[in-house]
Length: 170
Image 1 (cartoon, one colour):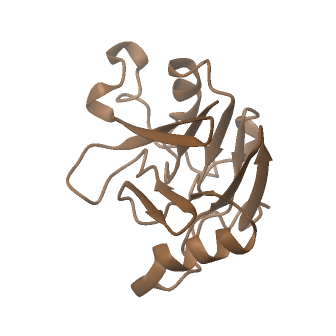
Image 2 (image 1 turned 180 degrees about the vertical axis):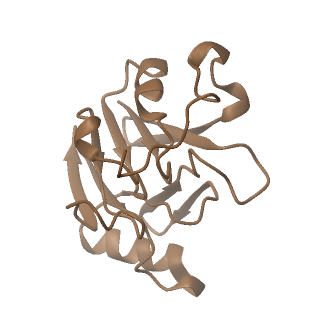
């Protein structure tokens, strides 16, 4: 199973490109701060980020998918000092083994207890000195692997670098 996870696109019109680059994904998940109308992206499942105040989205989602239980959140409602541990605890309480979050604009992949915790980074602007990114997660026979795709690796003919940020009033 292949899952593509993105976050913090902040109006950058990139999600259709990601679907085109990763057409064989079984699931497309966005961890919040879309800052766009989610109806424009029917392939994607979303949660609400702290900048998605215009749209009616859930703050969290539990997604059972092909034997995997996924917890999806933005992460801004969890305490700063122990965010990853708190998200993992919440996911574990919902019987999820994979938790995806955003908000920090810093990609992350770690195991906390029984939960694999992944932050795909930001599709708009990272805060760790690396290029913008999204994550490709592969799950097979209980094994989960994560690969980050950085903007400098994205296809050059995509036009993603020329696309302007979309705002809700456009």
